[in-house]
Amino acid sequence: MRITRWLRGFAPVAGVLLLASCGLQSGSSVPLPVGPGSIVAVPALDGVAVTVGSKDFTEANILGYLIEFALTAAGANVRDLTNIQGSNSLRDAQLHGQVDIAYDYTGTGWINYLGNETPEPDEVRQFELVRDADRAEHDMVWAAMAPMNNTYALVASRRTAEETGVRTLSDYAALIAKDPAAAATCVGTEFNVRQDGYPGMARKYGIDVGAVRKQIVQDALVYQATADAEQCRFGSVAATDGRIPALDLVLLDDDRGFFPKYNAALVMHGPFADAHPEVVSIMAPISARLTNEVITELNRQVDIGGREPADVARDWMVAEGLVTAG
Image (cartoon, rainbow, N blue to C red; front, side, top):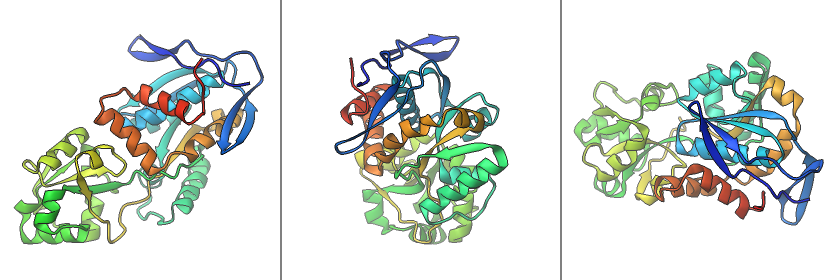
């Protein structure tokens, strides 16, 4: 049986978007492709109530909608709590059982949630460390890690990179030491204070934070401001953001390997994960397709193309043969 009914629209209810026109035709399993020419049947989630969350930026919203479409197609009754402001707010909602499932990032889990200072350079090992520690300490389940790695990074416009010769973070640190005004930097609010952000990067590269000409702006404003190279010549970004190639920004090489790996993975509240192990079977083939190239293009369609994250997520799912419209 192919999926023939899926998420069609949203209706605002008390400030929260709730899914409408959900469900699938009668049947006991949902077939999902897991590779070329292969189909696996996994148990449906008929009538299971699921609350899906996400953080409040483009990529996180797209990832949240991918979960919603997949689980809705599997028969779940999905409540949409995407676009929660900030990592800590999403985390608190999951710890308290208010959100059952979301995509989050392994580096965030290891450093911000679990309080570690040193990241693991191997992405698979980093995932395993987060998975094991978070389950033991907080009863949170990590699963279905994607190949995409949305690490933090600094960028410059191509013109700035060519004029200054800055191609690495060591070059950037040297420019600050030589001419702080030439290294004016826009940073997002979280990046400015997180230990896996500017403070930790400054320690690793010997940057005098007192000398930095730094402006704190909303994350979404960093990209254009850096491309214009007037307000700032360098900026903090997420490495898979679609505005990086669209605005011809140049990623500076993290030549001392400071930034952790930020592979996206499913995170579930323990009781929900234990009650519904089939969720991982449904989501694993979706996660497996989420490369840096794929998610950067999906981000670009929203941030440059002006499309809605839900539409981008839906169309990609259809194009990949993960759901069929009907």
